[in-house]
Length: 269
Image (cartoon, rainbow, N blue to C red; front, side, top):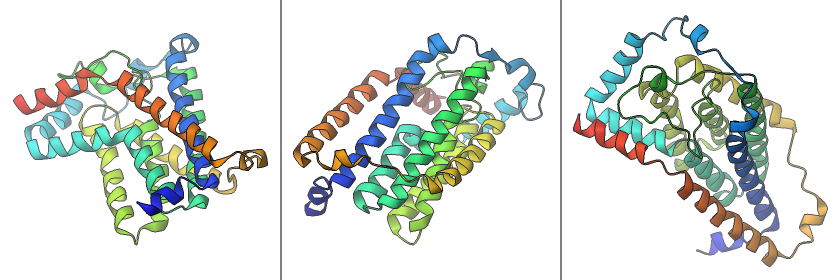
């Protein structure tokens, strides 16, 4: 495809694409290091469970209803597992690669970075466990993976990133592609609650964080060092290819068989 070839020969596109790769790798690295640096984080789950809409009966009622309606359950599972990594990849591809909208892409990146920083700092101070961990919901794994730490619940970074995506995509809402991505993104907050991955308060906090991060990123366009523009395009393409394959390796390392088991259990129940 000629348009794609041209995009991947544009230094402005390539530099920004690698910035997205590095920001994502940075968050994954934080998750890995959290096992060491997060040891002083305070578990406030007990106090959190005193809030309304956190009871076992409420959570089991929601998740049980969704599991009982197979088409709805499968829809939410599919939407959820597009989720964090998938929603980032789709938004970056659409805005930066497909539309070559560097202005909106810069705000998207700034929103991601602010969201990562704010959520990470919160998790270092205190943490809350997800409903499926607290109430031992069937079909879930309570083990940490490369992509998921059970302490990363409030605020929901998943929903913060989705909110940043929504605000960036809204600028192109008249386009079919943007409408499809907006539709998927709108469903994700519901999926995180109705599948037992997050509390309602996590989602609300994540949405507020996403809105704030995108607004703060409005005037923080990515300042690309002029020296990067002097790099050979072929070199930038090699760096991009390396980061792409590194992302694939990270994805394969982080695959969690328990997630597939959850879907199978839901279908067989």
